[in-house]
Length: 253
Image 1: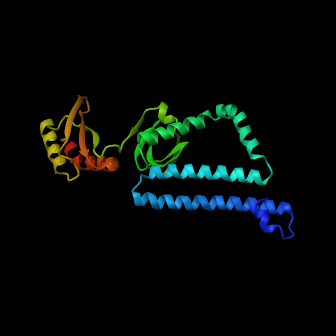
Image 2: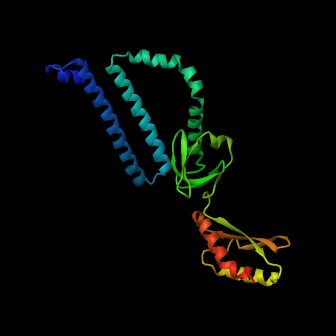
Image 3: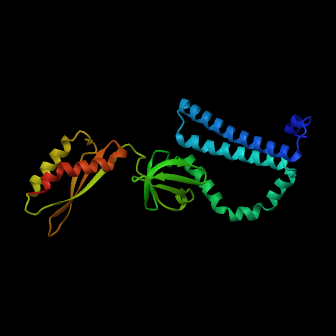
């Protein structure tokens, strides 16, 4: 006899209704427990200065653990032999495991990402031609938010097979700007003027020093690449635009 049945044993109530009430209480407690644990993890994580990635993974561990316990309790309340249920899981485990091999692969890849610290929540990464900010990391997939606010869910197993880039792994980033210097402009003076302008910008680093590299001479002009280093990896596009705006006057006669 369950605890709920003990509470209602002296009250004339249909046994089916008792089961419904019991299952409802189990589900409510499971939901409340997940909310409390998530709140506790977030508060504790901030206090201990844990990375958001670790907090999200811990939340998923507790979430699936609570769901499993709730399912077992519900099955027990329905009169299903839980031990037989667990045994049946073992019997069909091979078939289910084969069918869910992608999920297992995603889970293992997620653990490797977390352990290796390849990237974390807040980093800007590129994988399979998708670029975005990591907003959530789970056991099965990683969620990216693009610049135009699109949400992309990347299976974790993809990080084991595809090359991916972490644009914010290092604090220093290079800003590249391709320019074409018209043929009727004095090349040496143009380069000298641009170098002086670049050096005067307060967001450019002195080391590594900015460089203007001549790529080729074409019919329309001299193609060059300007390389400038910054210490804000999240503002590459912003500074590339500003660099083009600042140097425009030196590229037009």
